[in-house]
Image (cartoon, rainbow, N blue to C red):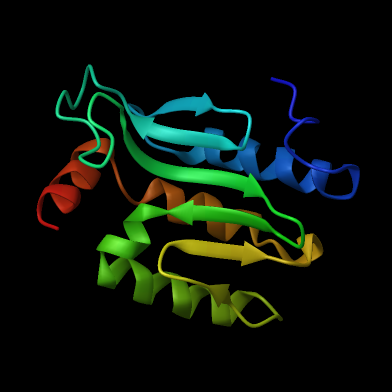
Length: 140
């Protein structure tokens, strides 16, 4: 896949490495897609026919990696919906990364790509299967 249309040259290597880490660690059953804005991992309609309630007929989103002007963002719906997973990630990040965590409800922002904790991200994305994400989503 050609990511050069999604990210500028100075963040391209980090963006590709982040995608590679996700691909290597994400449990089976998620599907990788792109829409010209970023790379997305979804629960396909063949697994979850109800799909995303906001946009009927579309797969259930789980993760997205998007290059913004000043950062690379990882959107992880699991940390938004699972407070225990969020706490684990916040604690692990603080213990492993020298910079302060820059995070919204589901968005983890990496302004300095030199400090992306690739192993930690690999561990984070491995912690929720499609079935677990569907259960969490349905409990919202």
